[in-house]
Image (cartoon, rainbow, N blue to C red; front, side, top):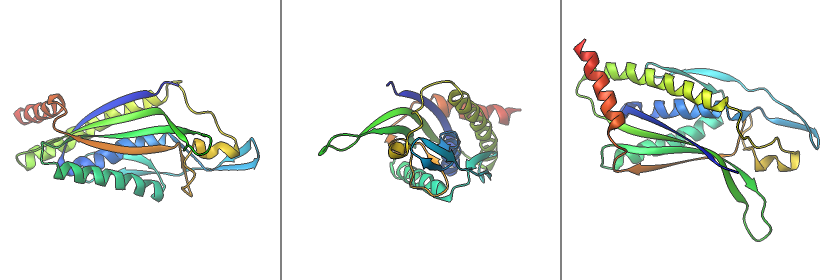
Length: 218
């Protein structure tokens, strides 16, 4: 099985890191989750409903949709918070990458642990820009909102392709495919990781600064 990989790049102000990452990660998980499985017998099940809610950003002109699962939201916020803290304390220009990996487990014989096989990875490259004044911040607020809209459309287009997904499991195998620990929603097994880098390159941040400069010139 080949693991497919998608890379997104965003350039944001420091106070926008949380909301931008939450918007993108929640969008992906919205499409990579189901309602809880209710098995009637082995191989026969029904799927519960899931709720969704609109989230308005405070520092970006953007509204995104997420699953109305507080447990899932807390897990994502915890990972994003750790990523933001690492960016802040890195002492470099504020460049890093947060990744959302979906995987399935393959049972191994004792005494070996189960093998985790990734089937899809989303990597979000982040560059933090420093702005000079409130006017630039207001423009950045609008431009980042526009860029996030484009990224969400891109995510949905990728997810709507007819590509590999783990097959629906039997009751005895459901924990090999889905995270069943949440009470109200059932995402595919996933893990979030991040890394801080010296530089991700200047193309994204340079584009954002050019957009702000061009808008100020109007």
